[in-house]
Length: 112
Image (cartoon, rainbow, N blue to C red; front, side, top):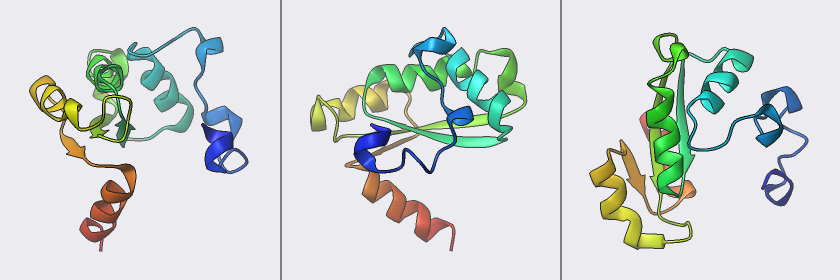
């Protein structure tokens, strides 16, 4: 995904979490590991599956959760498309939007 999006050289490898780190979605330890590497205090995890949402929710149960806050933004451009809107909302997603570009435009307006 990083290669296809053209950001492979813009994100340091030290900020990657992959299966070789011994964690997989929806294990919240994946975000805990990323938080320890980057030191963020707040983050928004953008995903398009229920496993992405569960990753954020499971992160909140880790030892790191007291050091950092993470919200979920679920986009409807994934495999199940718009049919995921209700399941995402019912499962507790904080933000649900049609795609990442809509979310980024919203975030840009909020931060002005």
